Image (cartoon, one colour):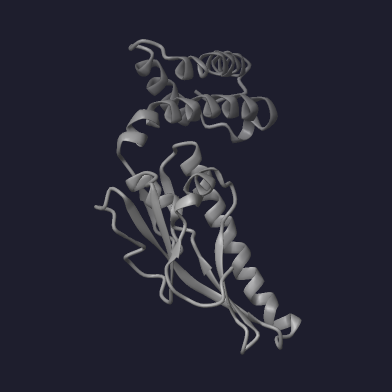
Length: 220
């Protein structure tokens, strides 16, 4: 919270923000107008995914939510995150006037929280305010993308198993076989732990498929 605009030094907050699991904002107070202006820092995870965590960080309230979303990416010492204006709250506003802003704020928080989660688990797919989606490749992503894929495969086979048991009429055999071929192709290489995680649910799902085909429940 601050009482006027301008660049905010946040060097000692980098580690804190790195581990923060909720969206954060800048609040600028105009005491004369009895008004609080809210600026969003939702682009922080995208910035750090692209350029890492710098030793020096400044937060700059800006009026427009347009590129550039940050500055100084070539500076190894520090970077400026442009925090865009989102809305204002005034003591004279009615509950109805505030409600629409709160609804918009909740939508923003949902999107920002998802992006923070993606950054923390190194799944570098980010959703932007304009419905755009960006994928960040690099040293961090290159280290983790395989395990992320293997985990999704395990999740897929667990869900195939559940569908076969709970809602077999919704099971798509052709879809399952595409996942199956992909999984079997991957097992031709050394089986890493995360890929091995998919092995048991795959075997269970495959057995159910064979049983239901034998009973005539599934079409071949």
